[in-house]
Image: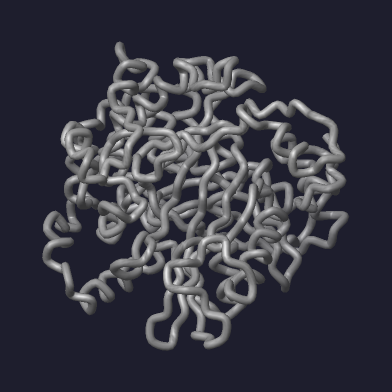
Length: 500
């Protein structure tokens, strides 16, 4: 592995990929780079990273931190854990170590896994659930699951009067019409230094002014990688974006919806099944394989309950409405942005030829575009519990392989038209719909729970807790009750402004 251009300082220093990091590697980096602090970080039930800070007193203490981790109060982190038996261990995963990108005390941060008093993985822990989901998918199919997320968010700052982009016309806008470009670029740099494998960043459709505040939507999209790493880097990225916003003196929200009529923020997830180094979702001629159709069938079948992990507060369902480029119907298609599962435009038709046409001095090339094709799941949003959402998608992919008629189930739900066009009402009428509230999502999770609990992937206690939490919102009629009342909608948005 050539690490010369890698933005991660640990990868460059150690000369190896993150997956190969060992405890002695971390110790050497700390010793030879003036590191004064170790920060252990781990996800809570709210999806945000929690932190323990350790001053590096000497090498023995450093070895102890890295080997044993530390005790934490699980009942303060997860509502499903009783206070009477709540002690847990958090143990660092060395492959997640990164140099803290912010100024101040030189520090290395490491993500942790949860373990019980007996040294066993905590069954309801988000990262342990994700690990089991991937293991069971591999066992059932012999395939690895790669994913990548599209992280959308709004940057909120004082209104400026010069070079304002037209309302809801911010897509891929450049400076000076996009005011948040420097912030986004700095966030991307820090995320890459922390191990995030970024594909690109850009401004998104959503932009508007409200009072003396300016709202600009941005997106940072990642490259596909193994399931566990994809989840880790998304969680770290959200922490970096928020911490950087605090330093910049601006606000940031991943909230699904901010106000009526404006673009909401999704967390679209691209997936691919890998057989070794090859993308199993693409056939030799570039078309979708039967493996891809089976995975799509699983996504569609479990879609109503997947909202329990990916759309977790009442504002989520103010985004999932017709004509807003967010799905409401359970179907799939090619390039169609109104469907739940989208097969994005591939490169097989013009790969290499287009570059020669744009650059006449270049010789014809035949690049391998096999890895570029993904299948996109479009309903999740910024409120998602990232580990549980990706675990749920892995379960869904596996379920598609276990269905007797998976490929036909997928074919029957393919659409190649705009399903919101009045001319295609018959197509729309035959499709099932996503839940319209947290309450409905809770019911659907209860209906599907056996699939998630199969093979011990999702803990029954975890499913019980999620069902109870979603049902407690009592939001079945909320969209109708708040329709047209901007002040009540604003207060609701404020309640969940920092979700996820």
